Amino acid sequence: MKESTKKYLEEIVKNSYQETAFEFNLTRQKVIWPQLQKKADAVPENSKILDLGCGNARLLKAFNNRKIDYLGCDQEKQLIEIARKNWPSHKFELCNFDEMPEEKFDYIFAIAVIHHIPSKEKRLEVLKKIKSRLNTNGKIIISVWNLRKSKTLLVFKTYFKKLFKKPVEFGDVLFPWKKDQGKNLVTRYYHAFSKKSLKNLAKSAGFKIKSLEEDKYNLWIELKKD
Image 1 (cartoon, helix red, strand yellow):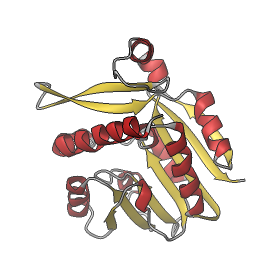
Image 2 (tube, one colour; image 1 turned 60 degrees about the vertical axis):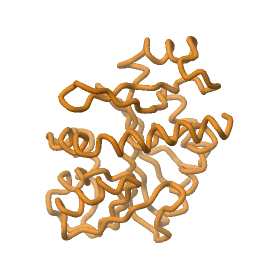
Image 3 (cartoon, rainbow, N blue to C red; image 1 turned 180 degrees about the vertical axis):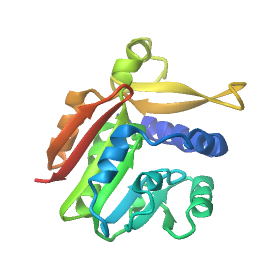
């Protein structure tokens, strides 16, 4: 992918969350996804956790006040401010994929994050960086939208009709996100992973795959150092 295209897509992601931070927070007040709750339940108490792309820190609901050493990290200032207000006893930092905390963690959660990263090269770079932030027996839990299942036509339509008017990878889509009770739309960028492409990315980054699962809307992969 050309550098100009990558920058273009990164700006779409950044701007979309800036414009919808308030509405995004409201949509993330619902019950925790069963699969996410299952992953959180498996984390031992006192584990050191990085919530990468934490948003409003909804992940903390899944831990239900269990004792953990938590750090939430997101590039959107408004969401970090909301997270700090919601969870004043936990730590939060502004950061992006190029500015991850230097410390080591037992678990890194990247929930609905990796699919916003444009280009295979950048996704691989990010996963390698995440790997470098894991303790020896550390694990990473990743979820991505299962768009190839839920939005199959959109994935093919985007690619073959060249809706971006730019050279993109197969699976790249621009997706409308409703705000203001559906009165306005904000465009978001996603990469639609298949199980195979997600698995290949993990292996290329040097991870061992502990599990790869699918639910109605998401793909879930749990990784550890090889």
